[in-house]
Image (cartoon, rainbow, N blue to C red; front, side, top):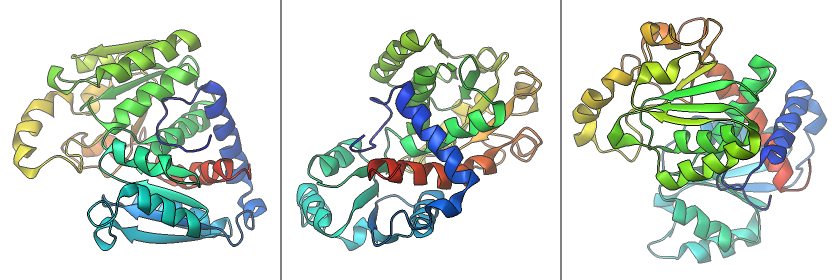
Length: 307
């Protein structure tokens, strides 16, 4: 791993190594307190954030390093300076770069011109750090990944669904997506996930029936209906379209009795899920949020050759 831009090219071995490293870090964090002494991460944010910013900044601090937070509005990013020049200059100062941007092409351009590792903290297309953390959380809660069924219900054409398809198929988790026809995952990503699934022995299934998707699932996953790149003018139309895909107690009944509920946050109760689900006993959303910290430490250490 030179960079982490998506889960497109990560296989089962790559993911399981990161999961194993994350278990070690979470169990004994003090062991790694000086692992990145005198090393610096530049964090570039075009999109707002709570979990991504805080977890990466805390991760660098707890690893003995330092993180610099910069918003693109305060940089000559793209308008007065090319992304390539931003990457080349920043590489001279910092040991690693994390960027949370709108376009995947921009993070690819940043990595192409950077002499230090680049981490995708989220784009409209992919969210690899979140999904790697989620896979760790599933292993932590279920003691396995291979052979489980994860059902994503809601907006299928988003970064969470895309990297879930790629990550689950790589490690042998059956992935079912229940979404409207107009919000299907991008076909080229589905095709890539199907190839990964054939290698791991897992299944990929896209349906427009939320109950069918949720049937006998070990994990029910959803995400916001209003991603950062969705305009406010689309809100009412999307609510109407996605309301049948709300994860509520009725939908959870179609999953296994010991199924867990996952959401990457932020979440709006009464929209993509009901309050009694996200605040109920099956919800592990805040365990997910915590595990972002531990997994991101593993990712940073791996990219810097310290893991």
